Image (cartoon, rainbow, N blue to C red; front, side, top):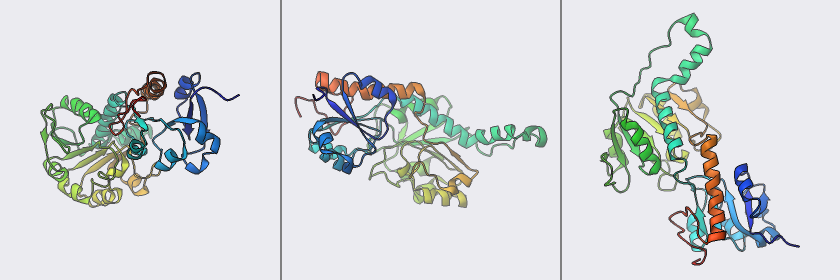
Length: 323
């Protein structure tokens, strides 16, 4: 006898809390990865939803006969072909708001690590060098007197800006359209922002339009005291140009939580003493990942029990009745 519950396909890994929340209400189907070739005829027929860590291609959507919803674990959904989903009436959801504060906190920590070299100072102490060699060298950079530009001012960008206000720095931003609800100066181009600031925080989604937009031209505009902090998606920063800018002294330092080819980080970046590196941990706390898991589950439950998702993305504002 077939399982009467709606079937949810999990391609690859998924947070256990999501699985625990869904287990009683849904049939769980598993794939080793998000490869359409792995979809069997039975999976194609039974699947009504997909829960994913940000990887669902148009091919995978097309391989499933009765797909209604894709629930993405994360606020960024660049790995999900939402445009294709929209053409098929498939709703895509993400997990906004619940991770904004955690990512903003991480950004501030990464910025301070980059400017003040706190990880290197801790390593110095742990190696016994404070006792043997004397005080750790003075940090050449400081947050004092800096002008910070935000490339992107969505929910997370705004949370970062609010935190930076407490540090007494001057704030500016670049987005396609100015926000009337903030007091920060808006620049109509990214280059214009980079010329006006000495610290650039990159917090935009990874899309074709943002790919490598932080490049050699932007580094040159920032100047020799410039600092780049990347916390959004790795593809927005041209890593080769960044390495060259750091090696040449075109900019002073960089802090990165995201990379172009994760989890692989260029050795040249690892070797540079002017770079602070984190392994994509922006939202990586138990509390925040639990909240993200709950929102993934809540979207799926709401869709099948109430007919509409909790947090559909802008491309797919569908209800179940209106699909």
